[in-house]
Length: 546
Image (tube, rainbow, N blue to C red; front, top):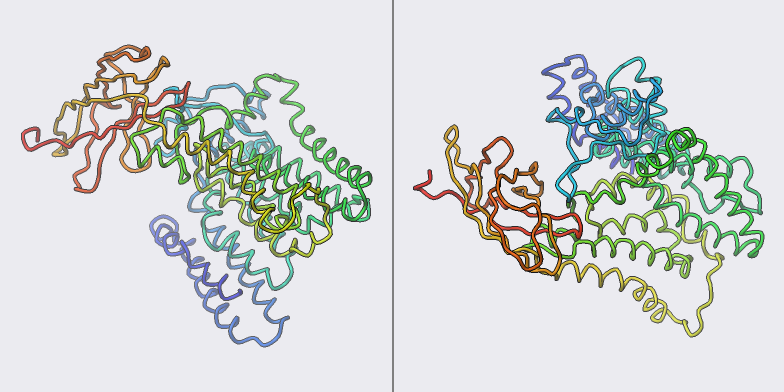
């Protein structure tokens, strides 16, 4: 494991060194020293003979990883959309101005800062995360006056959580913590971007490590109170922590009930939950009192904003592989039903599913309309923490409700599968539904700087559904959608079974078409209520058009 962690430090290091040589030679020199440390660690990992000596090598591997992450921060700390929004929220806090419900459109003028587009044809320019990261970053922002304040906080949180996890894990697992948190490279890049989820991750580490021991003997004790407070603070840092919380509470109640009985188990679980709620409320109180409705809307924004499709999950069937779907909302229904089904399965079969409680919540995102890999990988250190400190033996005596007639592995497996069937049925409805519009495209071709493209597209759209639709148009090549195209001619809404002629123009008046034989550009038409998408291929310019 020490050797694997050492090898993982090579990932992304060359790119960092190359970038540093162009702008920060001193940082490149530090990375070169880290290369030497990696080689020394690899040699020592294979040569040392005692456990104590190997632990010292693990410490050196961790120190090398920390140094590489620090170098990476010096090279890249400007932040992306989440970091920039959180920095502006920190600035608002410093000046006593409202944080939630404010449109900060100017923050997205930079090409580096991405925009979350919505299916209603707009974009989200407001702050949609709990306030803890912005609160912590506010005093740092008073000194740095830029998004680097937030990225410094999130990078520091990642480093602190990595060291804490390393200390808390049993010795044989420690190098795995170094590899997962720092070595593979993906978590540091989220920290450099300023993602509040990294703050939530740091707070969840002490919550998850040996979590089945929480409340043992019927007493929370100082550690239990600290874990509950960290859970509440994590929920006040980013919404992903919300999805883990009910699984932890179910698992905690089941383990304690197997030890203490129903009444005492309920009491200790209630004290744990109340402590977490108190910590969460303490962080949010100021903002809730300031303007309750906008604060609540901001916290719920990622759940109800109807952001444009994105990710690697099952929604890709309708986005990438078919002509669209008139029932995209069913992906969201399936995601919610899967979450509830997994919660029910955890309650019924906690002895079997208990070790996977830190993984199960993220399965629901695979069915959602926003299913990018960040929802899965940013919490992977928690998977490791549970694997190392919450083994199956910790759930051997956990309480499970008895279901009449449900005995034997096959019957229990059938019940578990039955809990997931409604979610899969919703996904099937979404994937099998035809697109709501029938599109015919007539592109207007042009050449700009010897590149072929389109300046506008004449679109004939036929609404095949019984619902009035308000289509918005964009293009995509590969997985990402462009900025919204401008409708220069055509109605804003399309009545049921009606047809209309549209003229749509790309942003800037010109959209380059790919020249490769395997690259294709598509025009997409989306609606927000109901959520639908229709995709049509934009034919490349012929020789005469060129």
